[in-house]
Image 1 (cartoon, one colour):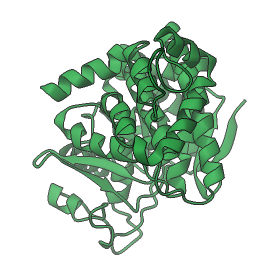
Image 2 (cartoon, helix red, strand yellow):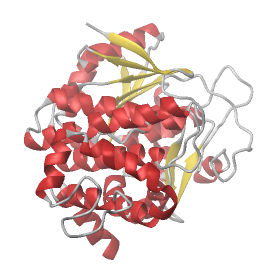
Image 3 (cartoon, one colour):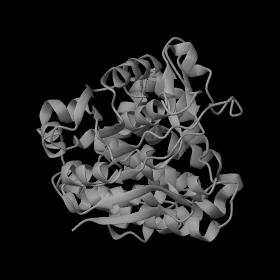
Length: 382
């Protein structure tokens, strides 16, 4: 049975689709949009190690006119321009991604930059210089034209980029990462626990740490936009889905139900962005480290505890909510107790902590921490 839901109360798109095999669902949505020619952006890892790309192409039954296998993390400007030219060459009228966040960012950028043949004006990007003339967070008011090319995202990680109207692209000539804005959201995001279960454990856990970081930074924001009660509940519920189910996937990487529940947790973590509640220092500094070769999940593993400790004097109440939420999760409570933590944030014989950094230190140093914090620290030192 196919389930389709409106993802966010304040936005028609993207729609959330699950319940059918991802290839079958993709074909149904493409037909509903009147699509004839599909261009696929596929994960290199999934394409090399699984038959998922072939399964998708088989389900689309002759609609595929082009494909790009693999893109560099953080979505390089040069690669976006390459794919743009290939999309134009094939005459594709829809982009479908199969994989992680870099592909989602690329799809958003490509559909924004692509020519709309029904308009006299268009965002006709041919070069790096053309691309960087369009609106981004440092130049939001630059002129641009809307595009009508639909795109469908089938994520395999927990990065969450599928649900925003922003796209991060990195100019490798300067190592500056641009947050493109004024983009059209995806038409539909298709979730599949079975697909997600093929994602390598290190990639999965790292992207999951990033999703947890989103929840925590939203809860600890200094600017609580209305409807704050809705946003706050979504972040708490997101943590309650993400934390135990990430631990379950460490126990059994093939647990498709746990993987799917993690995906639902990511949806909740992004609700804040829809209401203009923006992440904080961990997210921002992470975007600086990213172009230097550190993955988002690894930056969060290093930065999240440090940011919580640094900000404790100004958002202690918010961090107390994060800490109490974590302790309410039985799997997390067991982990913290095994590491000698107490519910007030302290350790036996020590005063209570004002922040949640010790909880994150314990979590990231233990179950799966070798995927995140240790690797990130090494990368940062290098």
